[in-house]
Every structure is written in C-alpha cells, then in structure tokens.
Image 1 (cartoon, protein in one colour):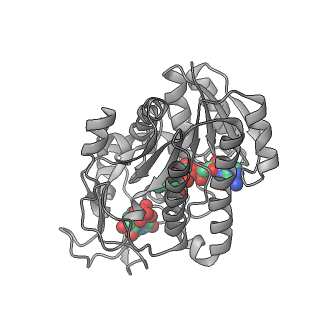
Image 2: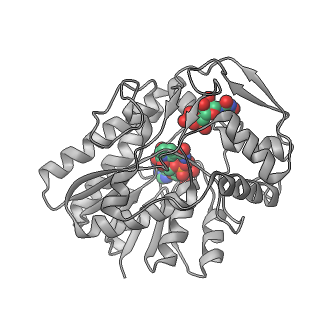
Image 3: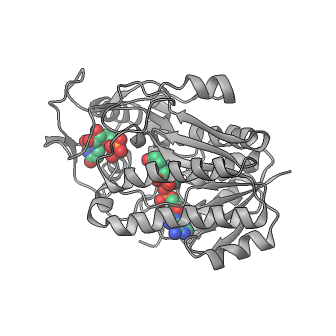
Length: 341
Ligand code: NAD
Ligand code: UDP
C-alpha cells in the first residue's frame, strides 16, 4: 500500500485526514514541528485506528532536516498542511507568514524533486477567490485580491505549485480549496484545539459552551444577507478528510494540476450556527452583536460539483452533526489536548 507524508499532519485537519487514510489502508508518516499542535493528537489517531504512525519532529522550512524524512522512507505522495493560518496574526506578522508558508512549500518541493516523489496535495483555501469573484465559487475562476497576507501566501503557493508542475511533466498536483472546516471526529478523541483566544467562529462557540469564554461577539449584523450576518460554507472535518483520501487516489494516477473546492455548496449564517448549536446540544450560547471584522466578506460558498464529478466525493454530514461533534469533542476535552491545564 502507498505511503503518504503528511507535512503538518498533527494539526486539526491533518489528524482527521490521518484517521481516514489509515482506515483506507494507506500508511501515514507525519512531519510536524508542533508549533500549533501536539504529539498527543497523533497518539489518539493511533488509538482510534489501531495503527501506528511514524512521526518526525521537524521544521519543514529546514530542508536539511526534512531530507532525513525523504531519505529514510519511500514516499508515494505528500500532503502539505504545514502552514500558519491565523488571518489577524498574518496582518501583524506578515514576514513570519511569508517565510513559514512559502519556505515549507519550497523545501517540500525540493526534497520531492531530489528523491523522485511526484505527487503532492496542497491545503489551499476559499480565500484565494478574493473579493471580486461572485458566489458560488467555481474552480476555473481567476484567483482574486486577498485582504490579508495569509490569503496571499495561499495564492503564491498555488502559483509555485503550478509553475513546478509546468516544469516537471511527471509532477501531479492537487490544490484543495477548503471552505470552513468545523466539527470533530465522532469518537470525540480528536478535534480543533486552538492556542489562546480562538479566531474562528466554531471553536469560540465551543469554548463559550464549556465555560472558558463568557460570550460570543457576532461580528456585524448589517450585511446584505438574509439575516444580516455573514454566511459561510461550513464543512464537517471528517467529510473534508475523506475528500483527501479521494484526492490521494486521484493524485497517484494523474499528472498536471487539478483544483477542487471542498465544501458543501450550502451557506449558513453566523446566527444559524449559534441557533443550531444551541438546539442540538441543549446549551445556551450567550452572544452580543458587535462591529464588523475587517476583511470579512458577506458570503463565501462553494460550487462543489467538480469534486463530485471527478473525485466521486460529496459531503455526507449535516450542520447538526457538525455542532454535535464539536460539542462532543469539547465537553470530553474542556482544555483540548492539554488535560493538565
Ligand atoms: P493547524 O494549525 O491545526 O495545522 C497545521 C500544522 O502544521 C500544525 O500541526 C503545525 O504545528 C504545523 N506546522 C506549521 N508550520 C510548520 C513548519 N514550519 N514545520 C512543521 N510543521 C509546521 O491547521 P489546520 O486547520 O489543520 O490547517 C491545515 C492547513 O489547511 C493549513 O495550511 C491551513 O492554512 C489550511 N486551511 C485551513 C483552514 C481552516 O479553517 N482550518 C481553511 C483553509 C485552509
Ligand atoms: N465570527 C463571529 N465571531 C467570532 C468569530 C467569527 O461573528 O468570534 C464570524 C465571522 O465574522 C465570519 C464567520 O463567523 O462571518 C466565520 O468566521 P471564521 O473566522 O470562522 O471563518 P472565515 O472568516 O475565515 O470564513
């Protein structure tokens, strides 16, 4: 069976993808510097699947250190999750974001080139559609103007991967544009564990529910949307992880670049998220309405037809599943992976 290197595989999406790949028979190797994750997540992946995962603690920017991973293993494909992802922080520390996100990509591509690994899947984002494109987004739309350095790193990394593939006809690249991943594995053993104050909606809601935060502030209710709050395409992280398994099957059999949106195609508003979370979990989420957050688009959602047509993938989980599984993870792990906190 094929062996897949998950760069940044200990993180939120990487850990869930590890479970689905291992359950589908793939071997998984994780390289991570644990800058936004911890080894405990990998131990839990092993517990869920009953399979072992080889890990390397390595900064993927460091090509010399990364080479050991390629030298010591016969890899069939790489999935590149290893990036910094906090939009606000990227505005304050743009150089850190450009350095980390671009250098990890270059190191991986250079090692792949040296060791003859020809398949890569990249964690891109709906943010590359920028401000100009109308919803729902389709893959052939031109990349747009981003509102922050994080988004620009994704645009640049897509470009780098496309150029690398033009120069090496054997290289197979899949760019996965994620929409808004939320939820957790149904076991409640792995989930999203942000450090500090969560930037994203669902982890914030979960921390209010568990009593770590007093109340949620909803950023703006004067948008031109049905209830005035922003709408996003929330996708269950397990559906997203299964999309990666399909993308691995695909990338191993093809060459060139292919782009896929991974979303449900159905947007929900912030208010709908809060209402659904309260209803399915029987918990009140105290909330207030505040000012708009700079850079937020009123709506972002996918046309997910291409992934169904080409990969045979579509989402199966509902918004209720996403809210239930988020709470199951959070209530079993009130302090995330840090049980001693
Ligand atoms: P995450 O922070 O949980 O996972 C990223 C992992 O990469 C972490 O384990 C971190 O320690 C590791 N990492 C970062 N820099 C590294 C480096 N230099 N060397 C080694 N490891 C490094 O984030 P996630 O939510 O799992 O996201 C994974 C990828 O998907 C990221 O590239 C992110 O930008 C992208 N993405 C995420 C979302 C989202 O909402 N979660 C949406 C769109 C795209
Ligand atoms: N949001 C909010 N309060 C929060 C965090 C997020 O109202 O504390 C809103 C945000 O304005 C956006 C939606 O929730 O409309 C999703 O935000 P998130 O940061 O999770 O995803 P993104 O903006 O990257 O799509």
